[in-house]
Image (cartoon, rainbow, N blue to C red; front, side, top):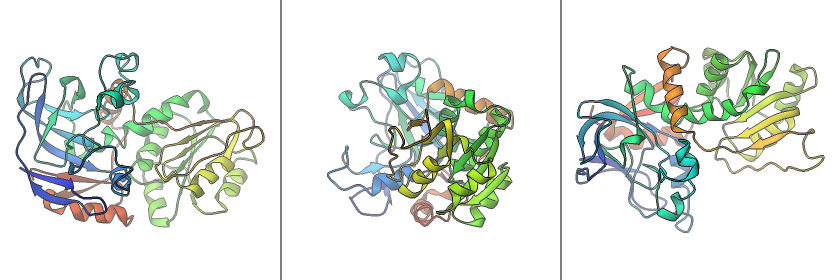
Length: 346
């Protein structure tokens, strides 16, 4: 079967032919209908050999959806022909966090060598994907896999981040979204669907801000050294109750810290390597700073319910599997509007 792999440190991803996997006991084989391309993949491919925690080659793709092709012994929850999305942050299934559906925070994953598909385990940008357990599948129930597959990360991650701050997003409040790309443009929609907050979106170009306005941002600001002052001016000098940074680079993290109000939340989602100093006087009083990772299985079900209700829709660009390296190139250059989705089987 065809698969897109990261083969060697420092190299671009390539399309290769590898054996089609066979499901063992408890496993499920999917014929992949759609697979997402993400900045997390770019981050992985920027690591040195010493930083990589898993061996290469690696089949990429941690956002996956497909049709159940085969099931291993003992699988009961799904059957051949079922259309499903993949819950990506796999855990042990047995620890305290996993028992709550929070496999994204599994306490034993590192110890047991459990890694997400595309981020250590073979990923979804392939004609077939082997899923380790049926609990990691969520029925699509009529949703379009192409529009839905980015929600398994680009929807789930901002949903989890926003959900933690809901008590502060009351009528009259302000939420700032820094970075309006793959995750950010979904985050804007989730804020509009879940809260009464005013949404201010920041990005570096007017084209990106146009997408932010298209999906529901009330106001937009160019993300530069003066952005924090503009946010303060727009909020009567107070700042925003919640700032969500989907870039995470040093300049955007600095903007986030300078834009938040007393008792606000700063949530750093992006992998840009920025850090925010926390201590008395470093931030307004009683500001909380968080760096969440993905979301729980139950939250993925909730995100897909929002999609069925028409409350969130991902702007996608589609590519065939042979075009996947080009999609990564465009993503790296910042040319993807919304989210890139690979169609491994056409």
